[in-house]
Structure formats: C-alpha cells, structure tokens
Image (cartoon, rainbow over all chains, first blue to last red; front, top):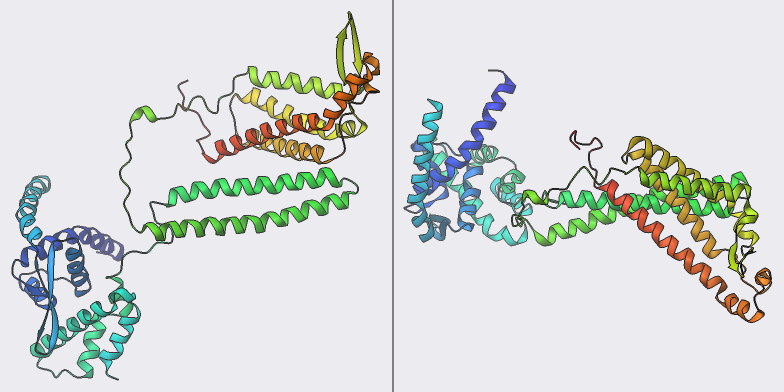
Length: 111
Length: 337
C-alpha cells in the first residue's frame, strides 16, 4: 500500500478508534486504576493506547463527570487513581447496549 | 540537573498557571511509572540513558502538554461567519467614505489638474491606512469577544422553510422605475445645459404666470457636476432597463453616483448661498417688501434644510446599496420566475 493510501487508512481508523477507546477505558475502570496500570491492562487485552492519548482522555472524562480521581502516595510517589463516578457507573450499562446495537447494525452492513 | 528534572521544567513552562501544579505531578508520576516498568521488563537500571529513551518516546514537552490544553482560537469557527460579514461591510463603508472624501476634494479643488490629482492621491493613500486600521480593529474586537465567551456552543436556532427569502424579487427591477429616472434625468440635463434661465420660481397669480430667478450664480456653477451625476444616473438606468436586474456594474454606477451626489451636496451645504430670496428677487411677482423680507430670513436655512434632506436620502440609498452588495447573493436568478 503506498503512502497516501496508508495515510488515508490511518485517518479513517483513527476516527472510530477514538470512540472505541472511550468505551474501553470506561469499561476497565469499574475498579480503580492509575494511568500507567490502565495502559498495561488495556494493552494486555489487545488494545494499545498511546500515553499521549490516554492521560488527557482520563482528565476529560473526569471533567465530564464520568470518572472520579484521587491522589494517593505509594512508595513515596504520588499517583492519581481513576475510577468510574456514580454517574459513570449508572451510564455504563446504557453505553454498552448502545454499542451492541451499533455493532449489530454495522455487522449487517459490512457482511 | 537530572534529565527528568530538565524535562519537567520545560513541561511546566508550557502549561497555564492554573494547571501547572496538578499536571506537573501527574505527568512526572506517569513518566516515572513508565521508567519503572521499562526497567523491570528489560532488566536495566533506571539511569540517564533509560530516561532519555523513555523521554524520547513521550516526545517533546510541547507535544505532551498540548493534549491537555483546550483548543485555542483567535476567532473561533462559530464567530467566524459573523466576523466576515461585519468585516465586509466595514471595509466597503471605509472605501465609500474615502471616495466621498476624494469626491469632495475634487469638487472643491478644481483649479489645476495637478491639484486635483494630488488631492485624489492623498485620499487613495488615506484609504489604504484607514482600511488597514479598520481591519485591525474588527479583528481585535472579535478576538476579545471570542476570549470572553470561550468555546460555548450556540443553542440551535429554530428554523422553518417559511423563513426562506423570495429570491426572485430583491434584485429584479421593474421597467417603470428606470424609465421614470431616465426621463427625469434627461429633462433636468436639458434644462440645466440649454435653458438655465428658465430655472427659478414660478407663480400663477391673477391669471398670469410670473417668474422669479431665485438661484444665485454659485448654483449654476455647480452645473457641470450636476450634469455629471445625471449622466451617471442615466447610464445606470439605461443598463438597468436593458438587463432587468441589478448587477455589480449597475451597483457600482449607483454607488459612484451616490458618492458624487453626497460630495456635491456637502459642498453646496458648506459653500456660498445657492438661492437669493431677497425682496428684489420677488419684484417680478409684485410682492410687498414685507412678505419678501420674511422669506429672506428663511433663505439659507430653508435651502440648507432641503439640501440636508436630500443628503440624508442619498446616504440612506447608498447604505442600502452597500447592504445589498454585502449580502452577496448569486448573480444568476433561478430559472422559474
């Protein structure tokens, strides 16, 4: 695949990865995690997320009210722990079902 | 100074004050976590070399901080269309004002071609600097508005198809209008240029038509300018009649005519008296000195009042022409009438 095609592909994929990453992150924060542990957890399950993308995303989700954060000092190092907020916990099942509905529709179109 | 500390110093520099303390700790702890994990998985020491590698992966401090910052606009996408419309109107108005100024200079100088040319060039120079200043002001004002409102999303405006403009009418011209203007212009042109002695005040008294020449020589000196303006109007209306709707050329002629008219009216207002309504003038009418002198006291103020009314109408006409132009409707009309 030549360069322009590659770029085109990357751009298109980037668009839907953005949405997917939000759902992935929310799904993994039912238990609290700190930034780096979350990256590892996602990558262990097959989703590689750049730290430049993930950490700002966590802050954004917190400012939107979906996550809650907490500073904790361990091993003489402060770490910021994120977890789903009450609002986030309430919304998550709905987000999941929206996602599943979309997957079914897309599945039909792409078959 | 350690590499990591130097990196964090730069990171801090790229963050706004409100976010500095918080984000500095967070970013630092992220880098340190990565270093720890890297050291464990590769079995290497956390030394300057490993730090350099990890920092290389993170990228330049500006890039790392950029992701945390909200998008910054000088004039945001929501404000931009309004900005462009305002800018267009302002620049057209500036251009018109400069041309009116030039018009006034031309009408008032008139002695030698050099003086006239000089006056025009000075005004053109003034136009550029005025336009630049106006542009800067508009950008500045909109930048402040943008800064003040932040990235607020507008409430969706309610819209219904009934709000759509009827495009067939605004630029169409009914033939009666230009015909009337052409006839009027021709009459006045002929009068002024071939029968100036007929211009004055007429009165039908005791079954007789009486005439008093009330206009001064100053008035007739403006003759050539009045003729010029009427010729422009004539041309404008002839083209309008032929084309049936407004085009840039006719709008341009209309604006040119308006500019000259305004310049002329301004000169008339500030120049010597146009009309002489003294007792001698009305001798032909057989009016008494009393009645005539009462009219004389009104004299200039009456004339000036009339001139100012005409001036106001002309400015209003010019304003609406500019507004029509700034709306930038497509030149071609829909095929169905």
